Image (cartoon, rainbow, N blue to C red):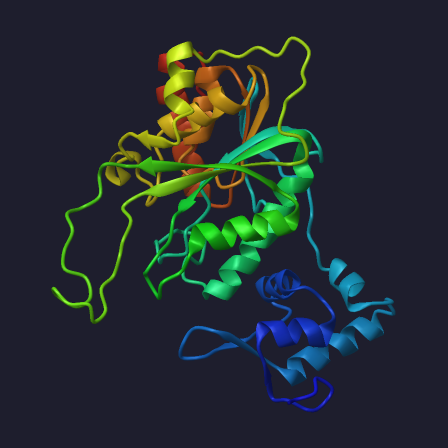
Length: 343
């Protein structure tokens, strides 16, 4: 058995976190900030050189800080971003959600989002081909930040795949739900979303054989979580959901079409119907709704249509442009008059 104090040329992410005395998510942040430069194995796993880990330790000591974690804090860039688009109670920020400090902790009523799925989608500003280990580290980090921003009775509607087979079979929903609970989120329910637009099946794996068949579920899920208290206690809290909608949507299987990538101009849009249902079912009129991965802006359009306050954060400027134009063109026509602002 190898002892961590012995010399070892290469370290896995877990071993590197033990060596430096920080969490795996911190190792991931260090890499993103250029403080560590791992090599990748043939299977896509990261390996860190001991000389690089020692270099960071020496640098931390020169800074005369009591711990590596505090030394790393000197590199954290948490700042307030200027609103990319703001009209009334709707705001778009072109920023990295993990680095922006515009949202005060304990102020968000509901998060509705669909994070990157890590299936190789060609986003302009995000690596969607991380190792699964790094993807889960990234997930833990942003789930933790959402948790801090939520009110005590805050709720979370998380649209993710049930599982995935690209790059290897992974139980995505189960793994992310486990991480969410470790962060502090409490589990309420899972809604199965049947998009109804999955392409026709082909023969995966072995043909007509028990040798190595693949099972693929053509659905996505919406995991419903909450912070500390499920029941919302709010004076004069107004709901706008109809009886028919309530009966239909509290059935845990939703059937409606997905969104067209070509029509929207985004590689992975979700339809406005998804956040609209989540918002009307789980938030009062006037509540604050956050989408930390805004993408093409569907969540904010649903906020406008349901009279909720909306905050969207998107790292890619091109997608902010798409979201802004959709708000102007779609939401204003259907309900509010958002002022056209030319840039």
